[in-house]
Length: 198
Image 1 (cartoon, helix red, strand yellow):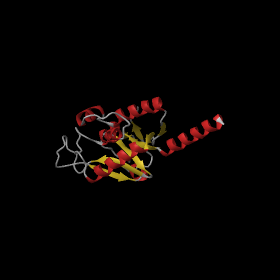
Image 2 (spheres, rainbow, N blue to C red; image 1 turned 90 degrees about the vertical axis):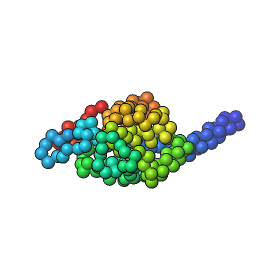
Image 3 (cartoon, rainbow, N blue to C red; image 1 turned 90 degrees about the horizontal axis):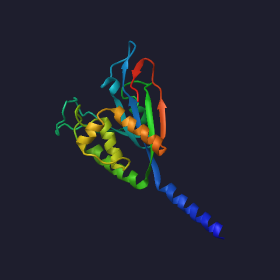
Image 4 (tube, rainbow, N blue to C red; image 1 turned 45 degrees about the vertical axis):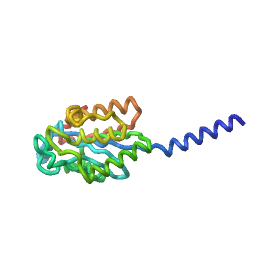
């Protein structure tokens, strides 16, 4: 009887845990420069690329310029948080064979609810400008991850300094994937371009 009772408790605990957890996925397009004729230059070159956070089925939120990219942001010229499908996100640079990385992160239902709430606010009212020496896709993605409780929260200036370009967040994600057993998926890009490395 005690054995049956223990099994019942284990089943209830597993059922509650399963309902209380979900996941989010960071999507990364590596920076690159053209190697062959017909390939275009990308913003940022090898240190560029793009990062977004999948927050629902076929929904990636990412931070883009609201207009001309200035050196330093002005509050009157906010950037734009936008919602794209996975296909639209990976077509940011009009390249169908980009080098990619996906990191799937388990989160609790409470963490996901907090993230969904702030994403709704940011999509309507972007909280900061997009600027070369300011918030860009990498620091903005880190901001969302910190809101969800995946990473510690930092000041805006610290996020800008620590995550100035995608490689810095990629390396942190790769380390975390190994340490926390997150699912990490890498896809090679076309040989017509020279890709950034980790």
